[in-house]
Amino acid sequence: MTKKKLQRFEENLTFGNLFQLSYFEVVNGFSMQGRWNDEYFRNTNPIVLELGCGKGEYTTRLAEIFPENNYIGIDIKGARLWKGCKTAVEQKMKNVAFIRTKIEHIEYLFSPDEVSSVWVTFPDPQPRGSRAHKRLVSPEFLARYRKILKDGAVVHLKTDNSPFYNYALEVAKYFDFQIIASSPDLYSQELKEEHYGIKTFYEEIFTKQGFPICYLKFLFSHKKFDEKSKR
Image (cartoon, rainbow, N blue to C red; front, side, top):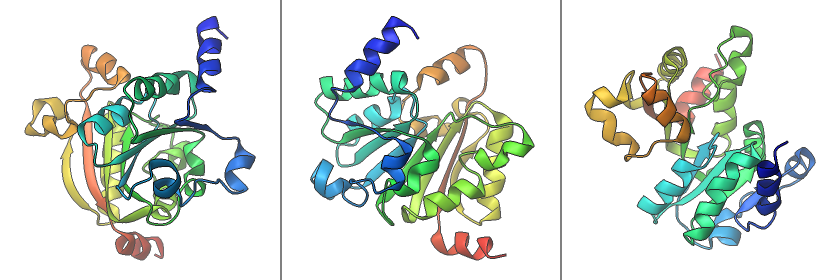
């Protein structure tokens, strides 16, 4: 492990906006579950998640653009989260928090109807069919989101992986979710403003290498998900 990583891990321990959770701390009753608005943000504003947030570019930038919302970034990589945490601290952002844990644990982090919107930004596409259940827009993960999302919550996806985008689009169509926007090449169409001008670290790399950026935005319906899941 590099010296820089060690320094970042040490500084992470000083950030009041970062929750670093072990598996047992998560499943045995996370103290913030159902209490984010009351105990941390101390307001009633909507909560928006960035899943696989990396350096937290969307978490912090959206929090700056939309101060009327609360933003929480989730990732397992502590060295990456350091950037988002430090940015939020330096800019004195009171509507930002980060959680270091696996996204598989998300249902233990929030209570039903506690989350208003989700951004899935450049996740691992899990290209092998045997790992399809690990894709962050798979029915298995949607079932986890069902436990925490408000009915009609907005779900955003950005990816440089076209097969993954096509998979997500088919999943959304299967559940009859209302698709608000979709594009296999975001920056060549009018939808380029949908991302509010924000680019992640990896997105900058992908676009410079000529990869098209795909985008999908849909509404999560509890009723439609439940109906399809029973079949």
